[in-house]
Length: 248
Image (cartoon, rainbow, N blue to C red; front, side):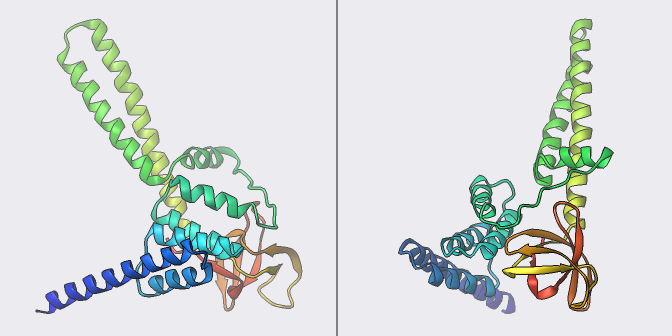
């Protein structure tokens, strides 16, 4: 009986969320962007989430020229639907509005090469590439084992070797990409302006200024301060309330 009650409760919440989502979409179509944003936020507070929901919420904030919330919600949408071109395009438009122009610094050596390779696709995509490579490797091995002709054996063996190398690279890239995601703690600056400090204190030396919308990575937490790293690898301390972390 309890299970039935839970199922009915879940279905009721899902139907309510869908009705609210449709209502938010209608408000957005009518140009009622603050109301649409409030409706979408209410759905999220109710425990429902989806890439489409975060995407629409990002659009509602972007229409109000609230760049930090727009970027935050586009990033949340990408976490749920990596590689979605519509989300990536709108995120790009929002990033063009950011005041800060911080260049991303590439890692040197092997780490930089691995970062460049793994960054070509999401780790889920690397997983599918590995599956495809595995299939072709097995198919080529079967061809090599079955055929009796020397020329065909050589062709099958060469193809199998290429697929095996691609399989290995895709596995390495996928695991590396996943490890990077697990180790990172990205956040979006929400304060219009925040002074980055050299120490976790309001009396600490000023290092540089950040503006709303920039993406940073949280390295350490100390009381009400967060140590963050910028895309250009510079680091410093900001008040916790100045940023909002993106949960994976």
